[in-house]
Length: 389
Image 1 (cartoon, rainbow, N blue to C red):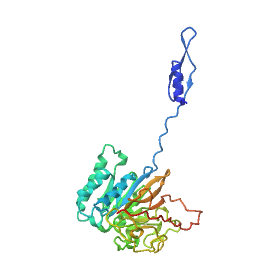
Image 2 (cartoon, helix red, strand yellow):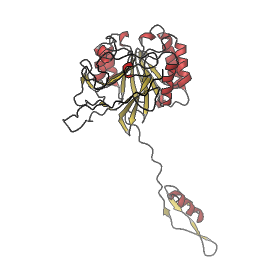
Image 3 (tube, helix red, strand yellow):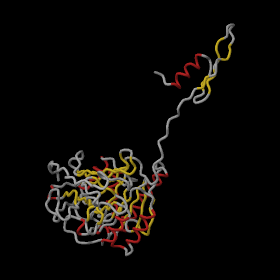
Image 4 (spheres, rainbow, N blue to C red):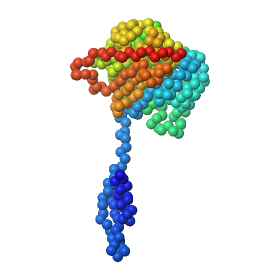
């Protein structure tokens, strides 16, 4: 059936008249002696296409996917992780340190370019294996941002905007509404003050603190304290996701109301339903970028529910037959700018998530009836599907 606009256009042509979409229809009809006489005027209203609503203040675009990796290396395993990122449709990589382990900025940048593209958004926090050649890496990373920003296909709203004394050490970047602190807390003394000020001044719904190193209690391998609790706590209080690497495995906490004491948020204890608001966040290390795979030496047993304070929601290391992979967080899902979905995929089976969880940034959201939090959920343990490397 013709829609209303086309129907009136057909009538108008038959009556030798005109149709004004959204306005007045006027026509002429044949007269009795070969002349014409005005036909009745008919008001025709045609609804114009409805524009999508503007994004909420501080929101990312809908279904904005970010890949989180660290400890990459420079061989086919490293390439496989980048291909995974490409095939999953990520729009940004946040790399929490340790790039190619070869102090070769050109080779690193060529690897990313060959797989993801010359202007693909790729943001890095400096790792310990990047220090020797950091000047060269930083030059390549700044040039990549410039290529992205000056591409005629990049609208002004999609430019990467970074501030701070030094990219990757003490810097804050905004891309498509996501606010990211790229830090090396070992490189400067006022890290807590910087984090507090930057997070307090950002209107973004979703914020990320990215650095390379760990505190021993915030990883499941054998890494010693390397950051200090001030940075962790400043990011928690500022309502930012804490993304790290360094330990060559993947592990994610529940929602924490205190990182230093590893206290699970009493109102949000569920392993796979998290919240990130001022005062509560979660921490992960995603260090399976391709270099090597470490083992779980803390918070045993090796299956859920884990030990220590019950803070860990998912652990994926050599003891869980881990393969290389990346964590993907998609922001603004299910039509909700304050909802995100996280999934860790490996390079062997990119269809089946190793870890899957949801996050809310809504300060008014709650779990279960008011005043009564549900019991922690037991995460489903999926069978190991076989090795590859």
